[in-house]
Image 1: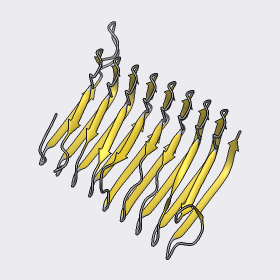
Image 2: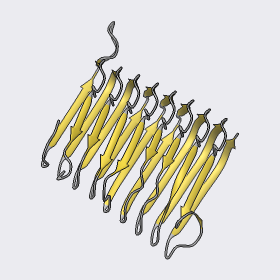
Image 3: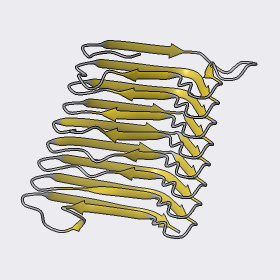
Length: 274
């Protein structure tokens, strides 16, 4: 789907489970995305995707399962409940999002299994456009499993946000594993000035086997901002070289320093790092 802005799209898929031929919805060839939506740069659009009790896959190279480029002044909601998503090819990210300014993005994943096998094939890659100010993104993930086996294939990589940005990330009861090099578990980027960032990750296991593959890396805020992090009952395992278990950058350009009128709160309890 290609639009010039001012678009509204609603997609709901229910009970499209696997069959003798594979996933309920699938593509096989190279350069064959399952869902491909782009309304940039004008944007001003609204998107809603709901996938329940269904399976989806792509087998070719350069075949993202869902690619969404919103443009400016847009909102998008992606909801997955008991969904199975897989890509097999190279350069085939499962969910690839590119957002613009004044965006509202909501992603909910519950009781689902997401896998990729090719190199350069992450699971959730959220990229910022030229300007992401005055925006928000919210991620809620519960009781789900995520596995990547290729190199350069991080599981959840969220780009930096702009100024006046609200970011909320919640994960509970989930399992994340990467086996390739340069394949982190979770990377949550910075946000700018006058922003709010809240992260809660509980009862979750993250394992990375490759080099340069951190388990959990959390970004910072700039001046006049509020940042909070709660990390409880986590099992973080890294095997490769130069692979950190937990990094929380906090306030201002790195480190828990002071930054104008900013406030930081961090709770770390029962976190096992190996």
